Amino acid sequence: MSSKSTFTTPLFEPLQLGPLTLRNRVFMAALTRSRSVPTNVPNDVNVEYYRQRAQSAGLIVTEGTLVTQQGSEWPHAPGLWNKEQVAGWKKVTDAVHKEGAPIFAQLWHLGRASHPDAPEQKAAGQPVYAPSAIAARGGKFRFIPGEPGYVTAFFIRTSTLQPTEIDDPTKLIDLFEQGAINAKQAGFDGVELHGANGYLVHQFLDSTSNKRTDFMGWFCCQSVSIWSPDSGAANFCLCMPLDETIETFSYFISEIDKLGIAYINITRFVPDTDPEFDGSAEHDVIETYAHLVKNAKLFAGGGYTGEEAAAAVKDGKVDGVFFGMAWIAHPDVAKRFEYAKALDNEPDFMTLYGKNYGTLEEQKNGYVDYPAAQY
Image 1 (cartoon, helix red, strand yellow):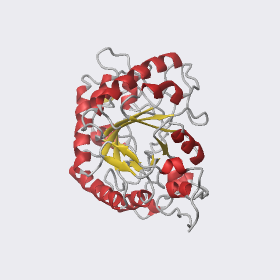
Image 2: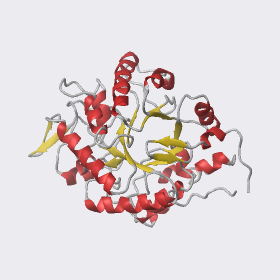
Image 3: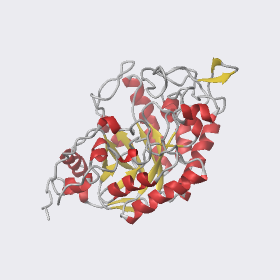
Image 4: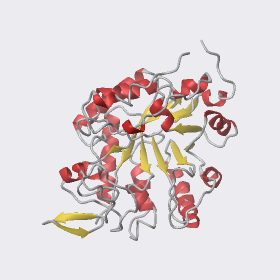
């Protein structure tokens, strides 16, 4: 048996998270994989994927899990809006719990970051909702003929595109509430509300996408509070001009921390992947917001190495660290940190989101076939 690393020891101190005892502080972040073939319902390959990673992770958060077909963008992302999906996820949670790990469902709705010609959006037959009728910027829908970019939110009426905004945001809160109820029925230990990456919740929090005066950040707060205390969580990132970002999210974090949620998960600025719009700029996210978290546990992510994460935990900057890409190519990330094994599997970016949305057997490629290290 390999000897344990002394550099990562702080990551392997147990952590109490509400009623849950986490065996370590190496967490698996939400990772969109688009493997719920044929569409929306978790399958046996998804079960194996999560089971493998549950053998060493302290906490697993699912890939973004949709609360409605209307909130979808691409095929084969899982959902939590019907009984078939609940049954599929129950197989996942049972497998994860058998391996000794807790698992939260990340609830997701894309809002304006969808397209009317996306297959799932067309099947839903409903509008592309947004806080305000403002188009997202950048991006290409490569699975749609012609690879169109983002468009202003709209609905289809006799083939005429008309800008619109959601008339009553409480309709969306109801969707998240039902998603949380379904998550509980599926055996999840909690839910994380996806408030990052320019999707629906983030759109309500950001003045570049939300010009309305009736609902702003409280949309997110009301959505989180639907789960019992110590079982909900929030995840978010930043996009507005820096001064407005700090003001908005400082208030938001202070208020959401009062709701009795289990944790708040923030993402560091990552220069290679973070877009900068409207004067947004690099700043120390942990330093700026950590002191505002008085009740919830504070988790972070964003390109941490194992040793860097251990130092952040040891110094009391965060309570645990989420890793993303590392878990794609390594089913045993936490164990590798514990025994000083390199993260030496190369991720196959051609199969990151599934290969041509193929058969269930094809979905195994670049998903459940990465080897664990030898110990």
